Length: 188
Image (cartoon, rainbow, N blue to C red):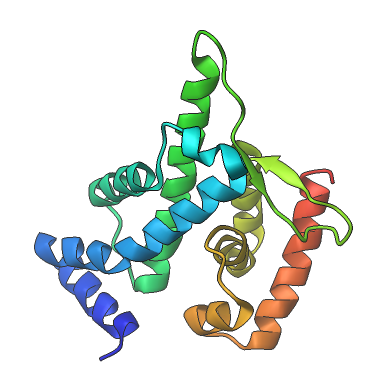
């Protein structure tokens, strides 16, 4: 049985009330969450990431705790990853707000969305990105998922197509649309 099927089976058991199955499902994606957290922190802070008080493990642990408190019935691995992504971004926003509220101030956490426009290195605040993704999600859930998986999780187009169970051409078309839409929405 592949990982996707194993996680889906664990989530079905968890939906039926087996808390241990939920723990095992989250543990199964823990390394993915850790990879994404590290990627996002380095992407946002570059060489300054070593000096941060928020380390990838802490970000993943906070995301993990928030996943455990969700009252959501997860359908499959893709659904769990989508929720984890949203929660991770919310943790980053909370961290950003806390740092900005410090007595001496703090830098805004930035997330780079390279590729929104071919000639630019576009930066958007995490909260701006969350707002834009929530708006895109209202218009087209799949396109928002493509953005999360590509820009946040760093997955390739083929991996996204497999995860969303759509063709590669569909993912590429969704990505082209979403880049343009986000560039307009974020006014770049």
